[in-house]
Amino acid sequence: QSALTQPPSASGSPGQSVTISCTGTSSDVGAYNYVSWYQQHPGKVPKLMIYEVTKRPSGVPDRFSGSKSGNTASLTVSGLQAEDEADYYCSSFAGSNIGWLFGGGTKLTVL
Amino acid sequence: QVQLVESGGGVVQPGRSLRLSCVASGFTFSRHEMHWVRQAPGKGLQYMAFISYDGSRKMYADSVRGRFTVSRDNVKNTLFLQMDSLRSEDTAVYYCGRDLTDTYSIDYWGPGTLVTVSS
Image (cartoon, rainbow over all chains, first blue to last red; front, side, top):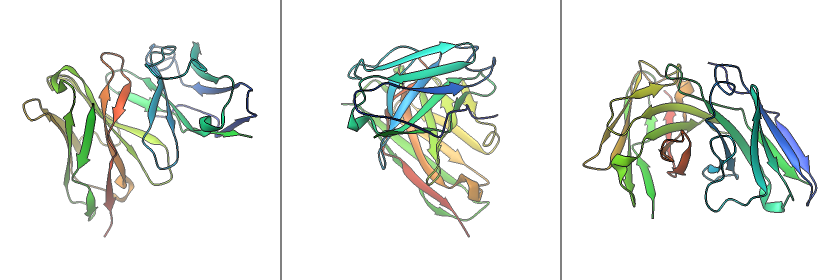
């Protein structure tokens, strides 16, 4: 049961765009459209930012968008703001025998 | 408003058991599937367990299958995680989470309860 692969860090200047990748396999990310992205500030509870690959929950700014191609999902943050600095985790359903997998997390730094 | 509050964490010796609870309020508990996720100190999120609306369907991470058991009481609006044969690597903050109806994503999280497995 391997975790999904995310880059450990990403960065961008205010106003720029940054994309975080999440690579799985044909048994998880590639097989299901149940990819989610969570934002976690230090000492805080995770917050759902994207679900079902591309959908945003109510209240999440449209600066956050999700996509998927093959076995890799991506989270793009446009118009970076200081408050976007946080850890971001992807998650994918991987079937009834495994359940869900999380990525190792990406620390996003706003320069 | 939606609230999830975990309890039952603490310090426990390796090999012993612990039962976590998660009391839900502010929504119709029986209409949502539920999850347990943990986070070791300074580490990332790790999926633990899932339970369907009525408890008929359950899923577990490989690392805890056979040792942990998820259950729910829809009358008392409470989710449980029975943890047996605890190991030092089970030390983490344990979060319960509400599934955003049929999306397999967690839209509300509890504040978490810390479990420390140490002799």
